[in-house]
Length: 258
Image (cartoon, rainbow, N blue to C red):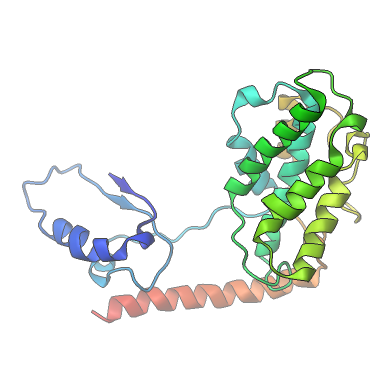
């Protein structure tokens, strides 16, 4: 049995689940196991923590990991048009940069905005709709005739920009979208960031070529890829260390407060 996101129902955990688990006896099947996923929270019942084996884990970070998660969520039949595949790849890059900058707060974004995978999936639908309205459902699309202005505006002001409240953060998003969603993205060796060593888009945009390109990226990327300087990495390491200590304290305090 697996129960997911249980930090959203801590009262039920304490009032119902813990009592149910404590009532299990020798008659319970020997192979019975229950797995519970949750964000770290001081509201998690102490009694539940005491009877559990606890594993703390985080999703892989970096541009490559974010791109891989995003593209693994796209159905295979969606990759039928190489021009739109190229737009998906640009979108994946923008989404990954947005997500990565959250790790470098307050340098990446001034606030912890609630950007999610759902935003990027919604952006896929938006792009498809705008392209279909402007160009029809033709297979041979001319990149120069794509609705670039409409795509950029919708992403900046709606899909991603709708979550942003700060002017400086909006400027960052505008710059990111405006520099990547351009006709030149279909040129050979189009660089995704204006820094040395930044990746260039693949020559082709078939499904296999897109996934091969993602696989070729390094597992870890410098902060310069997402528009930050090298010192951001040092600041993030300090923040991560402080976060680990804080989370450890939450768990140990909860266990000792019984």
